[in-house]
Image (cartoon, rainbow, N blue to C red):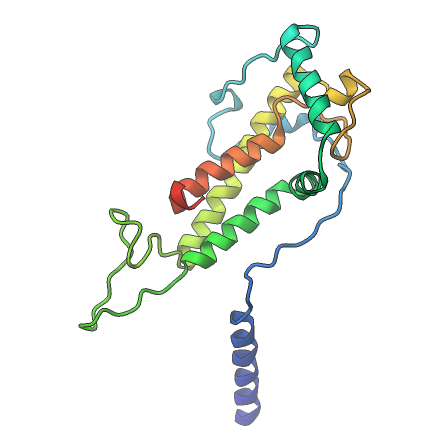
Length: 221
């Protein structure tokens, strides 16, 4: 019985050692385009976690679709979408298929980068990461497991509250997507009936950038 347990422990340790020696952590996955199973029209009425209410963030009223400002934006957008090269199309697919998971991948990479146990000094003592000198050595922060959990929790909460706010204003202003207003525009991503203003992708990106900048310093993002 003891030998079986010892063999099991050794096997687990070998698996963990092999996993720890992977060249790239985490591995970025390839996602295929998907359709919304539900538009969550009432999403703007959901209860945010940290925001007192969705009105805590104000979003300007969008320009009228008949205005020169909006028409100029449409013309610019049409020109941009017609001239996308291969790399740009792949970038669009990469970020629009699942932008929440993309930012979580970035967060995991930062956590892996900064989850480095400080080495000993010449006298045997250890110097802990210090926010006053983030360049180190050792580099700040030390992304140990509790810090990593906190970073991922903050990131998810910011995205969740941001999307609730976005959905509130989306259905308040009910701005149709550019390819609906002008059917000569070729959509660069999978079409859906969710109002386009404000951009949910921009909300996810802005909230992720701000949270990760605070957790891992702007110079590292």
